Structure formats: C-alpha cells, structure tokens
Image 1 (cartoon, helix red, strand yellow):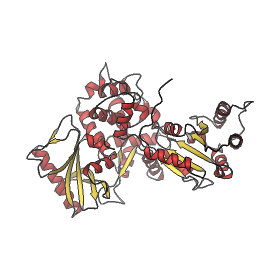
Image 2 (cartoon, rainbow, N blue to C red):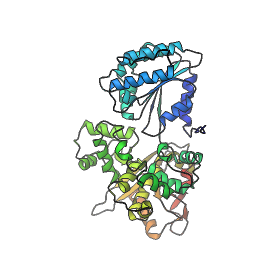
Image 3 (cartoon, one colour):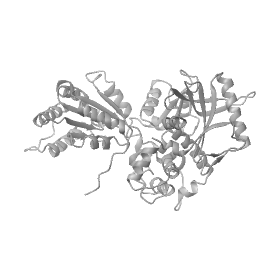
Length: 480
C-alpha cells in the first residue's frame, strides 16, 4: 500500500472547501489555476470521503466521446445492475446523474466534481445549457456541493463565473489556485525526502516555479544542478518539451499567446502594450487585449503600473519561471554530452537570467518581504519605476518599490549571489543617483529607504553604511 501524500499549503483554500461542506445551502464552487498546479489533487484530497461522482473532460474530444466517457465513468462509480448506454445529449446525462444522486441521498453532503470543464463544454455541445438546468432546477435545492474546475482560467471566468445566462451570479465560492510559494515548495520537497538548503531550492524554483507536478520529478539525493539537468535537459526530462504542450492545452489559437510570451522573455524591464504589438506584429485591437488578459489571469504574466501612473504606462512582465527558462536555455540550443547545465550555469547568460528570475521571486513574495520589514500591518502598494535617459539627463530603473501609507517608500535592490554581497563605491554611487532621479521625477515628499534583498546578506562597509537601511536574505523569502 502506497503512502498517502499529505496536502501541502493551500490553507485558505482548504478552509473555503470545508466551509462549503458545513454550509446549510447548496454550493457551486469554481476552481481555476494553471495546468499542473494541483487543482484536482486539492479537491480530491479535501473531499475524498464526500465525492459521489466525478467526471474529467477529455482534451480535444468531441461531444460524443465526452458523453461516452461519462457513461463509462458512471458505470464504474454507480455500479448499476445493468450498465447504462451513452446518453444522446448532455441534458440526458444530467438527468441520469440526478436519478443517481437522489437514490443515494444521506445526511452527509454530496459532492459532485467536474474537472477540466472547458474540455467538457465543447462548442455547440449544449453542455453549459444542460448544466444550467441541472443546477437551477435541481441542485440548488439539495444538500450538495458542486465543484467545477478548469486550467483555462480565462474560459472559466468568461463562460461560468461571469456567465450572462442561467449561471449568472450562481457561483457561491471562487478559488484561484496559485503555484507554491518558496515556503510551500520547501515543505513539498521535504515531504518527498528531498532535503536541500534554501539556496538550492531557490535555484530549482527559478527554473521550474512552484508547480507541484514539475517539482515531483526531483529525486532524493539530487542537487539543484542535477535536478535541472535531469528534468529540463535530459531526453526523458518532463520539461524538455513541456512548453510545446503548455499553452495549446489552455488557450484556443495559442500562437498569439506564445508570441507575446516570446516577446516578453527578451525584455527584463517589461513591455508596454504598444511595444508588444510592435514586437509581435499582432493587430492592435480587442483581440490582443483579450490575449493579455488571458495570460495574466492564468498567471503567466503580470502587469505593473510604474510609480504614480494608474491609467497609462502599464508594463507587462513574464513571470512564469519555466517559460523564461525554456526560452533562454532549452529551446533551439544545441547541447552535447552530459552536464549541460553545469556548463550553462557558468555563463554570462546565466548571470543575466538569474538576476531577472530572482526579481520575479521577490515580486511574488511581497507579503513575506513586508513581514520581514516589520510592516505587514501597514497599507502599501507595490510598483516599479523607469525613467528613460536622454542627452541631458541620466535614466534610472527601480524594479520594485513599496509605497507605504506611513510616509515611507522602500526602494528595493535585488541581487542574486552565491555568497555575501559587497557594495562597492561605484554601485553605492549608482544607488544614490537612482534615488535622486526618482525623487526629482516623482516629487515625492516621502522618506526613501534603500532595501537590499540578496541571497546571503551583505557585508557592511563604508559604502553601505547610511545608504542601505534594511537587508533581507533568502531566508526571509522562505517565511510564511
């Protein structure tokens, strides 16, 4: 008998699911999150003893095959005396399901789980209309939890959460499952007997992100370098060609999504919408706005407003670790022999990538940064700052700043090093100049604090004293 895997993290999500189970009302829960993030595992683990029926969509299958899959699943779970034949349409499917659920009522709340709903609800199949009937004419009056789940976050939000028909405002609870944080990644790997220090784990996270299905490939005894080598570069590695499957599995006409991902991968400071249009040659209009929205909702990119700008100047940045790593190091690279990553890890390209990837980690761990700074209870907004230089004045870029309501702004400098960072005279002068340009450009009256986030901290010297007020390390990012 295999050892049962413990559910890592997802504390708030588990609480919501248990509250729905204890509720006296019928509950319709939508769960969205990118491919491989652990949605199905969460639902089946929490509701293990309550699921009366579950059905997962089959990718790229027509309606007839989806319904055949239902009948096979129904016969397996319901175990009728005489196996049912595939119903003619989805309306018949749901009435067959109602008969089964009514025959198995009990004091315990029933749970019905539809996984990968976008694959079930194929075009012109009538699935959503039939589901509408199932929910509004029967389930809403029952002691039941219905969970609908999908990796195509934008489809789920558009077709279900914001549905204009019979499902409008019917969702009672929404869950958006994010990749693991660094802390959750550490707990997950430790549970799988992978014991690594935080620096090694951070290197893995920078290449794969906090995706449980990717992290599952790492074996006990492997270093970060070997894990990346085996999972990303070996011929049998899961992530060697995952990129080609990732976006088509989530989006229709995924070529436009991939084009934007490729454009953003080459620009560390991010791109404006107009820059993306120029780089991709995609038509300017509603279609590109929709693609950007879909990528953002699915967690592949993030949008940041430069400091002081709330209507114009939105920058889009690639934040999916694996996509960036794939496009930088795996795709179109001719690798020969063993220990490919060992060689690449010594290159200038690696240094450039690691800095950007570590910045992404910091952007995803703002709550941990605020906690380490002792300002968790202070309202703040995170932003970026970029001023293009010209013939008369120097430019400046600050990748993260925390604008606080207590009249302070933390200007954050991020450095990824394999040892303690040492601030030299030239770098110190650069920080002073950037702070000056920021203050002059924004005309802010707030106190400015330079904050350094680096892997192993910094050796204080005459250049850092009085300039860098707070120093955070990798350990702070691994906080809860």
